[in-house]
Image (cartoon, rainbow, N blue to C red):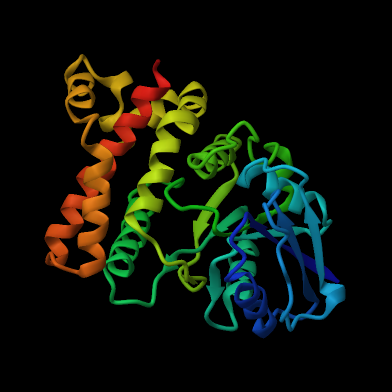
Length: 307
């Protein structure tokens, strides 16, 4: 019997974990295949709960980190917990919406020389953040088709255990948000492991976003994760839009912008977050404001990293 090890990292918020795990129960797999779920509690302040799971207990294993180590480390632990030939990484707030997500990934990986199958993420909501996230998903697909094979995340990604192990899994130096996915995918590409986009394996992101949570992660990404990423993939970083909002890639103008906006950047975030909740602005304008304010917050993060 061939096995897919489903790895689900979770930290603090397990509000959607049960729905995500239960969505795996409807999966139809090819003959000779089964799956096992490895849930990794990455040192949550309160232990996660699996009460209400409809999956047989012998198909689920839970491991808890004593301290928070970061998403990459949690995924590595989940992979080590199993021994299946394939590994499927799934974020705890991404719900499978049809019965063929896993089988479509497996079919993609059955093609000659394919080692990684990336699926997209969509949001079933007409809210601002639903539209915004769906545009991000379409942009990732467009970038992939144009040759950026590291454009997707690993929130919905299946790969061979062989490829994951050979590149050393996730780099656990990325303890904060950001760049751990692209780092892993770039290393897979550099070792000649072929990546494909599996269009039939989309999952629904159920998490309710807010501007505060989004830019908070971007600030940490600029302050912490970007530094490690630049050390490993300087040329790749320079081609990304993040470099345009990084004081380390500026001759001085961005440093002046940080200085001028330092007293107001977080109050601006608070005001815009309220405006988005009230849906005062038309979508096209709100999207532009969010884009530039997000870049500004990331810029402040890189400024903190450079000191």
